[in-house]
Image 1 (spheres, rainbow, N blue to C red):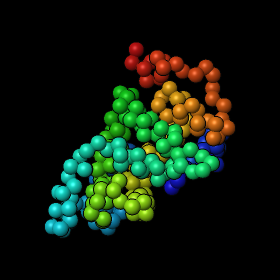
Image 2 (tube, one colour):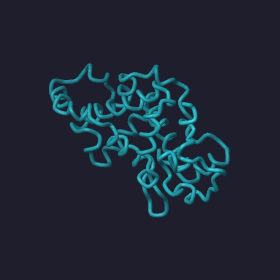
Image 3 (tube, rainbow, N blue to C red):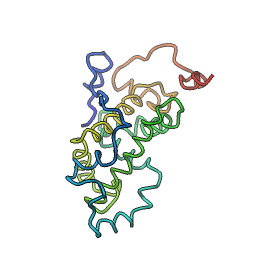
Image 4 (cartoon, rainbow, N blue to C red):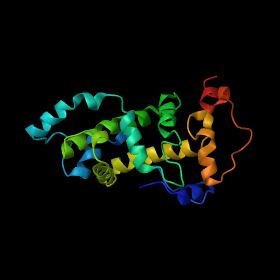
Length: 207
């Protein structure tokens, strides 16, 4: 599930699409689909009274700023290593925030990514009585492996990986890849001329 240097280099060379987007549109994917296959239950419809109370006690965490959860997930998908940058070093969460705040990004995709945070936290609470970001790393990894077995979960992870790759490879003017750290790691030479701050593609589309 982690991003590897070899896979990114193949993508740059156009050999194949390493992390293809799901053919299923996000608008057709709901909370039940996201959760049911992963844990063998139907969302919160079958919650026991004990689990229901646990969910209620974490209600505020489920509705708070989702960026902490997304940042933790990014770290799992693209961890920092001694010889390579990870999600933190490429400013992946800043890039994702910029893209989801942009009017050009599809509304359904924005909602799907943000709703997925709530669904992941619900699953974490049902399985471990804590929100995702508060779980030990092994339990976090296990939950991500579980949701990756469902179509909805794979689609959610695939979208996050797509944004991670964009943060790694895009010009720093878009918020990721500071000082070209991703380009240096991949020994990639960017195109010229590079875009100035006032001519980012989504700004030009608004003119």
